[in-house]
Length: 166
Length: 166
DNA sequence: AACAATTTTCATTTTTTATTGAAAACTCAG
DNA sequence: CTGAGTTTTCAATAAAAAATGAAAATTGTT
Image (cartoon, rainbow over all chains, first blue to last red):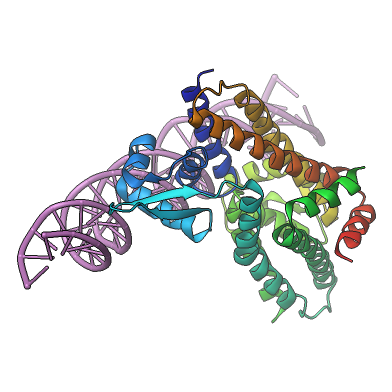
């Protein structure tokens, strides 16, 4: 396999994987492209590489900035903006965990707490409350796990898990 | 909040959450409905409750069966099929981890291994290989973690994490 | 201030994904 | 074997999500 083939394969695969996780294909592809580029790239290069429009490129670059997965780089004497990706994959994992926790887990916990307060006079309502309580436990577990990832240093986290799997 | 309000809120929220994770809304709603139902339900009841077509109901029920999240129940003297959900939320988590590992993580590991074999003569190719190697590590970590969840007994897993967070 | 380079926005279009509903297939009692 | 009850399939349709591209806004230079 040549380098260019490998590169394309990676960008393509990353995009496909992302869609399975509710992330849009282009955003993942831009991220992949920047991850494997040793140099910051400008919007035109990205558009050309991935064959996408300016608007599309711009919006997804903005989203990646919001997620803290890429950064701007200004070259002196140039007016264009250049972008480069966070290359530390552990840091990326922490960043994604942090955002998803905030955007997804936190609201769910809130709703579950609210639902726990329902009256339990019928068998149906009892079953309901039982399920909600169980879900709360598992969501709490997920929340703690994400928290661990967010706060962890790479070595600490690896160490903990090596202990578990020893 | 009345019980019916709570029920609807739950089904609705579960559906919304699911879409953020790349799972379709209806599938999650059917699952939620069955989770909180003390009795197995037939297709007509599900169609009525969620206001969906027979084809839609049938397809998503089949998918849920494939995922091992619901089961069939045949009532004696009845020709209709009834469905009930796995209520053990830990078992659900294990089941989902198992399926996603098989469908998503495993193929990614395969591709990454393949990409590692690329020639590294240019700086660009060197950077590429470095990134791929790093991603491999993190994906391997995710794979191990999912494996732990899959194989774990509830108490063992909880115990391990309590240790980590003590 | 005028202008050219660049970025951002957003109404429109395209693509993708989900849903419908009716026909076909299946199942089983009589 | 027949036919009513039930499930499954799938082409057509609808809904949702993503992408386009050109106009508007912004930025920095002279």
